[in-house]
Amino acid sequence: MLAWSENSYNSGNQFVAIERMKEALSIIHESLDDFDVEQVAMFHRRVGQMLLDIGERDTALKEMEVSVQLLQDRSGADLMVSKLHDTIAKILQGMGRHADSLSHYHRALAGLVKQVGSEHAFVGMLKNEIGQLKLLTADYEGAVADFSCALEIAERENGPHDARVATLHHSRGHAYYKAGNRLAAMDDYTKAVAIQPQEEEFGASFVTVLRELSIEKEKQKDFAAALAYLEECIKSVETINNSSDHHAFFFVLVDLLFTLGDLHKKSNNYEAATKEYMNILSRDDFKSCWEEFGLEEENRQMQRVVAERLRSVGDLYLTLRQDYE
Image (cartoon, rainbow, N blue to C red):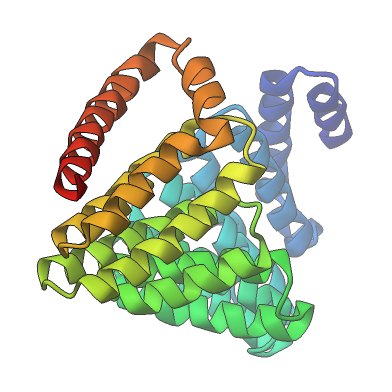
């Protein structure tokens, strides 16, 4: 009957397969002593996976929990129990039961560490999953700790320039950012961008924190520091824009270049401000991007905003010319 259910499942008859598997499990439980407990547990796990595949999470969860109960005190089953707790944690997370999910993640971690030690690559992967859940539930300090552990393992296993290391730097940077530690976030974002400069998400995060630091310094009237952060921000957006196949980042870049001119203007350096404004207009890519980007209706409002700023720039330029004359 079990073989029949597998054949039915593989041929696309999922509902028939699950019913046949449940019938087989009912017969097995009536004479459990005649069967290997670990094999029965795996049958329950298989039914659970089938149910997950068709979106029946509640019923799948029950099957996975039965599998854990059968294996819980079995000698040598720690690794399999750990994998089951990990699966249950993911199901619960998908159901929005985050506290229960975290509990099962910790059980999975404890069983895994018992079997392979605390420095194994699998431990790092599980720590990352726990960190992501803590990030989701606003436990930012806990997320930083878990990402740091995962990062240490990933760097040791794969080297400091691996893509997974970059992703973990970005995740930890996001946790720092959410916790309000923008300088620590910038450090992690910088490392993520250095490893994978082509990743737009990494660059966008880096740009966000630099822009906010620049605004903070501007509010403090520390225009030199504000300019330094903004210039670094512009360099990053230039890199993203040059590697991107669309123009969204170009208009972000234009806005930042305008802001750079505005900062010079606020610090009473009108010549530098005018120079920055005129540099925007003299860019070879400005006209082509302007025309192509404006073909899309939703982007025309952005064009109108930029056009308004250009008129302000023109007024400043005329004022400066009159002063010189």
